[in-house]
Image (tube, rainbow, N blue to C red):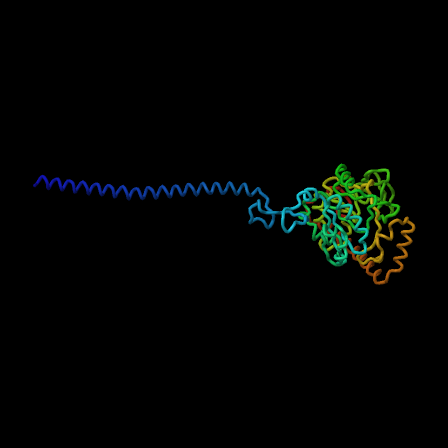
Length: 401
């Protein structure tokens, strides 16, 4: 009996001890596991912080488009083009791959014949064509076979430069190697698009224009007149009207580094610069031509040129507020210089006084804008302490010539 009682006491004590040990082990394990988890979470937090810091340092070096900072980089489409897309079915891959250049023109219905000849030449060379209708008339172009292949933008009584500033943003025309920004009163009988592009590329011209036939064209600057003995020229050597002398020492407009604004051709890179220089409110863009050299991607005496072998006729027909509003390009086709001048004079004499007044007002506004542009340039140069004039005009660094 006593022995059995001692055995029961022993077993009870043993079980109690085992229970206490187990309880102690379990409680200790909880604390150990908790501490381990806390340590592990701490290590993971530190690791994540290091990874985040590393990622941030990498991402800080990336440039994201303004407005697209909240998007993953691969989904942000920062450029576009003017290619028209079908409403269904696959795009015309053959056409999209061959179109690499853009022709943009400000046009009115009274110059329809001239515009038709120009557009046909460029469409046959796989250009995108964009027409800016300053008279608001679009439907009367529908009978031309190419009409639906061109992009039409209409705004009444707006200039080519007004349209260009608003519809030819560099990110929109990014796909095009060259942008032809032409007037409508141009004769293209002696102009070959593909030959011109080949010459521009071979010569490394960032900004260019076809030369003007001096015998039948309205030429405002001697530099743009055709030299029949040359393929390309970049400078002239002569005494200009007003007494200015162009010689070997000339480094700027109007002797070199200059094109007129009726038929400029810009490379993609130069256009991005020129677009920024176009003032939003100065719609006639007077003064811009003398400053184009700053967008020539280097030496303006080398990178700006006049192509003589592919040349134009400039009819000089006023359009917006024009005193010769009834004159069409057909009136000058096939006419010699004297006949053209006489015809133009007769048409101008027959123009109503309100048209003449409108033209005078346009010219007055153009001069006002020229002065504003000059003053803005001077002010910008004065206020930008980081900008250095690359063309070194010591006495007239900020002065437009």
